[in-house]
Length: 155
Image (cartoon, rainbow, N blue to C red; front, side):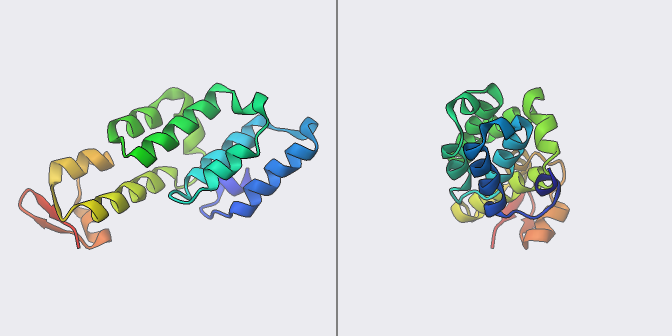
């Protein structure tokens, strides 16, 4: 739980916990497993999330919350913006993901990375929708974007 509540991510901590659960399944705490998976998502585009999934026993991997996290990972990798935010806002995941410090910032940073790689300019409205924000001024300043009329110019 400490790992999830800190802003730092260490892939070795989560994997060590999951390996411990493999050796002694009676110690398995499902809430901790879910937090490890959620924290591993913050390492995208690295494969930490998949590495953690492979360490899960079948009875844990089949749980609905794990399936939702797998779906979220798929939507992030596929850049399904509507799907990302609607799944993130779903009641089953919202409480869980808000307990992972910086998760929403991670989602936005991941989207920013994809936008800056794939676009030179985009309308302010499209970027606001993509990032689920209502004002881009501080975000544009943070990332060094230029706001020119109704366009965002990426560096």
